[in-house]
Length: 59
Image (cartoon, rainbow, N blue to C red; front, side, top):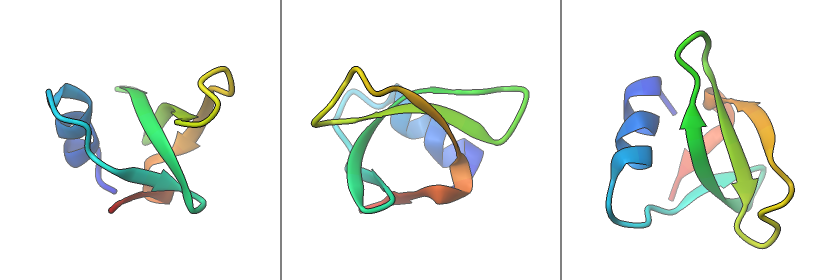
C-alpha cells in the first residue's frame, strides 16, 4: 500500500478492510518520517506494532 492511500484510510469516516499477514487490522497512524504505519489486529487491540506500508493490503 502506498503512503497516500494509507493516509486516506486513516482519515476515512468509514471502516475500510485492510490486512497484514492475512489478519484484519486497524491503521492507527501513518508515520511521516518513514514508510511505516502503527497498526493493531482487530481481534487484539492491545497488540500494537509498527509495520512497513508495503506489507498492508486493502481488501
